[in-house]
Amino acid sequence: MNSDIIIKNHIDLIENRIMSFVPEVSPEYSVIEEAMKYSLESGGKRVRPVLALEFCRILGGDVEKMLPFAIAVEFIHTYSLIHDDLPCMDNDDFRRGKPASHKKYGEANALLAGDALLTHAFSCIASADLSSKQMIDAVRELSAYAGSNGMIGGQIIDLEGENKSLDLNSLFLMDKLKTSALITSACVLGCIGADKYEYIPSAVKFAENLGIAFQIIDDVLDFLEGEHNSDIISGKSTYVSLLGLEEARRQASAYTQKALDALEEIDGDTSVLKHFASLLLNRQS
Amino acid sequence: MNSDIIIKNHIDLIENRIMSFVPEVSPEYSVIEEAMKYSLESGGKRVRPVLALEFCRILGGDVEKMLPFAIAVEFIHTYSLIHDDLPCMDNDDFRRGKPASHKKYGEANALLAGDALLTHAFSCIASADLSSKQMIDAVRELSAYAGSNGMIGGQIIDLEGENKSLDLNSLFLMDKLKTSALITSACVLGCIGADKYEYIPSAVKFAENLGIAFQIIDDVLDFLEGEHNSDIISGKSTYVSLLGLEEARRQASAYTQKALDALEEIDGDTSVLKHFASLLLNRQS
Image 1: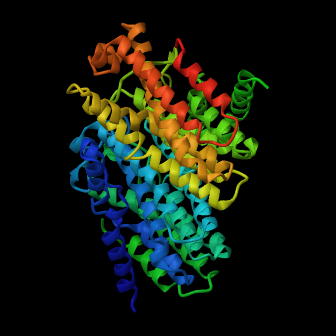
Image 2: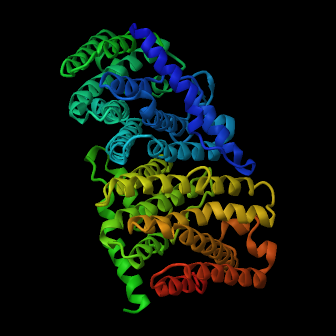
Image 3: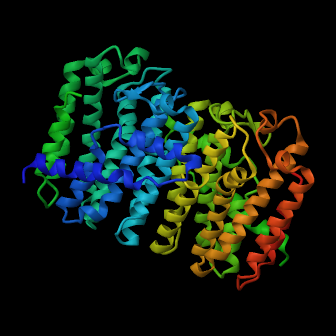
């Protein structure tokens, strides 16, 4: 099968099943279920769960059985977007062309929808048809990568960057935490789901570099999109503002290459991961 | 040992160890660690972790080993208070006589400190020196009780109650979710920590009734405190407003009695739990 078909199969599996992981609730508080689903269906690229499923697949794991791990990472990603868009954070009214959760449901419901997605990420993991050891290891890794020394730490640096300009080292640290951490958790959970713990170090190296490349490209695309981006309006430091457009692009390629090199350490067919990494590098949105 | 000493031992264990479960972070984003600790040390009654430890103790479990489960419940409780106090929720500037997290650290940091406590509740569970099965069962129970069909569902009903008056049934449902759910999770995690799953149904019955009693007393105390309470100022429905002061007190006693009756089903020395329940019923703050 070619790489695009395998990626599409992963995405189809995610899209077909993701809503089934949102708990049904009573009519008295149905807005929470509605708000969780609204943000989950808002058409992202599903980068993290695809990576989780693909790592599991190439390491011989059962993709269906570890799907809840992949969904858990997407729940965490989605909660982070809802909270990031709140007025006290980035104050973005739109997300992927649709009203942000807080514009659609009000701030309080958006806050709680984010909290619920974060909470139920761990319900997803605990629902997998895998060993208790695999599940609790996944909980430990996901909470570490999503926590105060992971994604949330990156968000703190991001907030502080609104009041002062960040240097390149701080920007790297921020993105290692804010973006790479969750991408890394996805790849690690793929290894755990396949019960191939020995490949976790290579998966981490791949994901950390891919995450930085991914974030540099995000900055490049935001710069090219221009005026509608709140980061540019607010004058925050980005790779483009610190390095210039061409050097930013060059570094994105260099980090992507480091990511690809890490895949050489894996005894399995990594061609889909390589293809996926190059799709991310060359994406236009 | 008498009951007060046993309860004090539990509280001492919690106070001595709770901060060690907050991850140390780099100076670049140390405010997240500081904000997490600020809210954790804000001197609550530690009702939930005490219940978790005591259930474990009377069922023959190792209280030291299951401490991380008890701490996890307190992390969830603390995050819920931080988020509840935010301007978009109850907009309370003070919590237990100290500035609320968002007044001390700003809204964005408070939001993230709550997110981090919620995230690391699950790190706590995964750090326990118990079997993988016990740990993942604890994750499953805690995320369910804290999630959209538990505590968060109760918060949604609470929000809707700001715009319309709730009837007694809605108030019961709200408190069953908003207050009882997390108290129940504490008792259930105590049973899991002791590896005595057969007592979970009795623990649930005890906790659900105790939670309702606890919330009624909260309303009574808030009413007696009077003008400083935001719920009373905003005219929200409470047990006192719907039942009157004396009937509210009578129902608190009745629910406490139902809770005590459930303890009869447990083959163990439940005298401390009974004493603790009566302390909660007769508390003055």
